Image 1 (cartoon, rainbow, N blue to C red):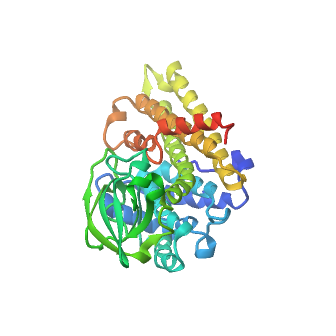
Image 2 (cartoon, one colour):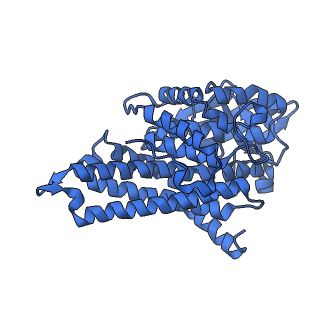
Image 3 (spheres, one colour):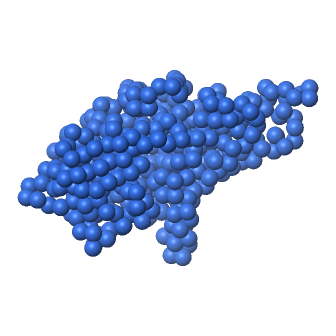
Length: 391
């Protein structure tokens, strides 16, 4: 089996150079070996190095800052990022996460960083030497970002941060943390401000968290964590818009990762159905098994249409495309869950055996329906778009 990242069947959404991006990403995915017993943090560093060597991390950084990304004023191309994540998701959820976090953890710096900040952090992002982290979620502030409690107060030429962030990818391995904290809790979202915190800053501690799929993730605690004023990203109070602008790009790519995982599940399910013999014939010949595969193939194609339509519009439309992006993320992640579940069923007992590809996918897909906007929040966004005339 080969990673199924291709632009051939959806050419209307792409430009000529996207084919090379898809090919390069598929090559990395095809060469990557999954080791379930290896340390997640060590594997994340290994993944970042492999992605950098293939030139894929350069698509997280605009050309004007030394990267390969082109397109909108923010300089990244959602179609390229989504194609890459489709290929990497086919191979391994941790490999995909390593790529996603280099983009998510650096894009706020690209958008709002000073020239000095960009010079300090972006080269390391592209080289895979500095792993990124995006620190927005708190134990009591997930979908409701405005209820953020992590506090930053100005103290002369520095800010002092106190509070907690939870479920932060790359916690403990990141070379920089983009942290969102409020400078004025009474102001709600208008008080949220972004900062760059480095791992050796005094007052920062990291606690690992265990989740169901291999993933370097944890909790950050800030206790009088003092950082220089020069590490603020943009103006005070501009952090909420900065976070949303970042998520507008990378929420689309979550759908790409879901497509890759779903395609791998379909590939594995088809191979099992053709190779497993029961009652004297391959189980593919059982009507219900064939129906499972037919449903999965149809849902996968529908998901690709929605996801790459959203990516195309995000790159080319002169308007907000929140509704289309939400549709793509919602349908792709929910459909991938169903496709993977069917593949597990086709595998029978092997499907729930640790080490099988479909068992790993079953654990990996679940988080995609939660992070960067839950499925429930995507439905809220879609409904709001309908009310406003699909704005």
